Amino acid sequence: MLPILLKTLPFFALIGLGYWAGRTRFFTEEATAYLTKFVFYFALSAMIFRFAANLELAEVWDTQLVLAYLSGTIVVYCIATAVGALRGLRIETTAVEAQCAVIGNAGFLGLPMLALLFGPAAIGPVMLVLATDLIVFSSLIVILITIGRDGRMSLSIIKTILSGLVRNPMIVAMTLGLAWSGLKLPIPTPMNDFLSILGGAATPGALFAIGASLASKSAERMEIAGWLSFCKLVLHPAFVAVSAIYIFNVESFGAAMIIACAAMPVAGNIYMLAQHYGVAPQRVSAAILVSTTLSIVTLTAVIAWIS
Image 1: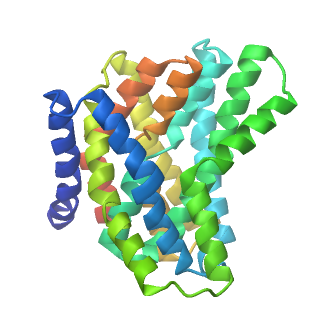
Image 2: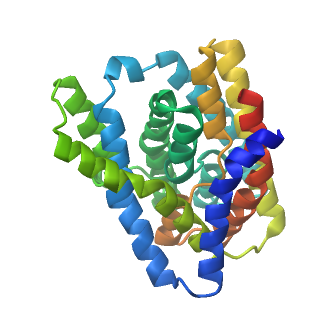
Image 3: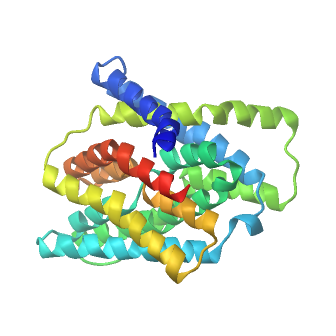
């Protein structure tokens, strides 16, 4: 495990550097917000487009892999939902906790880390996980929060979901990249160099932004944060592993990548959703902080195992 720890340590060191910058106010919350926006809309999108434009959809798409990841994720989602219901939580609060239990930082942490550790072959499976999280579960949380508040479904929910997907730069970059690849269009050298330079900022920028954003997170309600971190870091990769290996017989490398994605700490975009809808932002904040800290050990252990 030590060799793997030495490989993953630089990633967590960058997160730690960002945390220090945020904690000391060298990077203010406003500065962190702008850095996150730069990474989200420009650097990470350039990286995803460049990766996708060099892949063929036939090479990327793997039905068994998607079903394995989706099945394992749904089981953990249902466990977190059942526990929330037993505690008497409202539908919208339960939906936020369930989201924390299964949605990891596949975009800002998973894609850069796994692409560097395992090479270009990791990109396809990670992008499928990212697309599943964004399309299925980001839509589901909006539906459940709206139903919890209004008591019914409406056409406006569908409009909100579609609008969110269309405006998500990662979905747009992925779609445009695969379309570019599907049309067999060559990437001109200046364009490729531009995307390479801009996309190169995604890894350090994303990791630094994760750390800086953690500096503003609080660790209240630790028992809930601990439970959600356990779901995300232990139950999620475990159920995805069982689903991939024993039920859907996903080929070994693809199975390894989706297990690693499932082991990622709680995603930061859940906090933005929770804050936007005013649903339990503090417990999401604590879950992100605790899971990211614990993932130094748990994620390293999972990567060592799949390696």
